Length: 69
Image 1 (tube, helix red, strand yellow):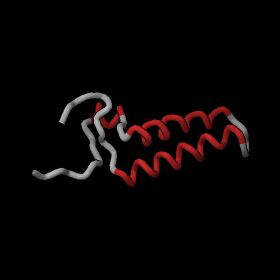
Image 2 (image 1 turned 120 degrees about the vertical axis):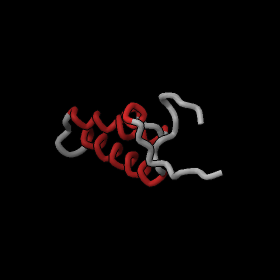
Image 3 (image 1 turned 90 degrees about the vertical axis):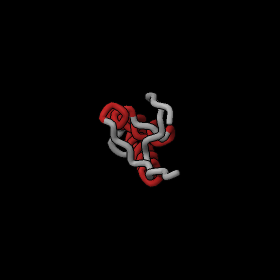
């Protein structure tokens, strides 16, 4: 496996959750309290779409299923 900042390190279910949380947070910008804090939703949305979390990479964490040969 290639090591790099964009190495896939998120499980599929986690990716779905991150995308949903990101969309929910972004909706705060347009609906509800209409606060700029909703822009924080770009982080989970982007990491969920890419399947790679830079913080996981730095900490050596991966929630991907282990592949056996």
